[in-house]
Length: 484
Image 1 (cartoon, rainbow, N blue to C red):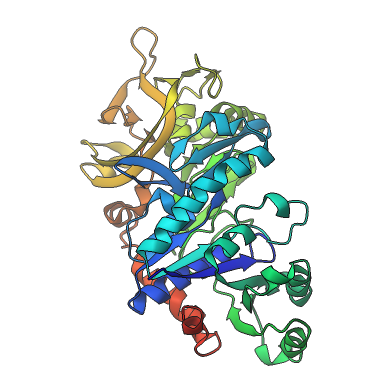
Image 2 (image 1 turned 135 degrees about the horizontal axis):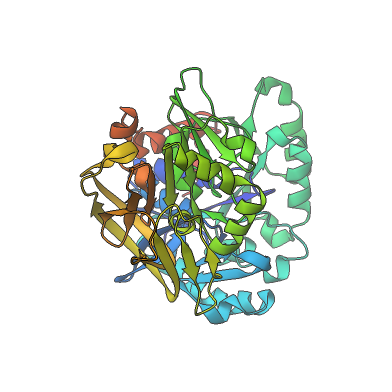
């Protein structure tokens, strides 16, 4: 029997669609259903390496977590199209896990029609092989300038005959206007797909909402089926990473970690375990003053390493980073951050851009035409110095990069280099500057234990909390009604 499809639409970006879809994946899995997540097209530089029918490919991090919540192996069909923003307003199009250069240069409206058959095929296969498919929309389904070419929201909902929840962020204000306005802009067929409104991120006394929910139902015929309280420390990264404008600090923090947020930053979601750690004062650094007093400086991944390095220098961050290194404090560069720490980057295929690096590690990087996308299980070699706690640890992560990095040969190299993972990770002689290509370092329990003496909260606990939180504040029986 074909799967029942439940779709989470939003009045705006950031309404909480991803977390609610994750909660629904775990809820239905807990009820004994075979569940799969789906999002037709995702725009994010946060990606994971997953199965792609015998190969390895990229999918959006949000659907990766939703698959884990559903207790199934993540697959590129769950997010058949991933758009990764690049410099100068360009996009890299990932189709079924692989870069498609032709689609990346195609006009948007033409691209949508070319992509739809792939989206439809992926969704149909999930419907044929599961009991429930939890579908996430993107942005708003009522963007009237985009609706004719929408391949993420209503077209998917119609094809799947999905029962839809329309979610709004009540913390922003204007929630009832957002819900009514979105509903009013839909045609009659699409209005019939909406089975309930959800007020998300609520703070306060729910009794004070009356009589608005009843008035809205009278105007639309659609009930408010859930009022979900704000859940800040839920433990999962937001869809576009863990970035927010606030420094993350608790009363018991003992270490300040500054993560540099350049314009093309990518894979910020891998730092969620640091955000979850009470002893860590986490700072998102955009200016030199943000690095003052930092114990660690992290240069994360980048979708455009050369232009992000230019930005870093324009902000004066390079000066502070080099002084931090001179004082033998911890510096970590991951993927693009590793490339920046090296001496030079060459670009014979015009992939990213040639630049001189920060020269804190005697490494050279060449941007290759083809992207490396793979899961990685590696072991650190013997290490000393500030990063010595990683010595001999095993980690499992993933790689997504164009760069091929190697050691500069003498007499060009000015400083000794220590290879700690062949072809993937190096430190300087003092052991305080570490560069690594493997993402997911802090998602390894052994690393968190060695670095902070703690075990990370399990993802299963996070997923179960999300499911329980949604169920507890939803209308009784609404979740079962969506799948009958």
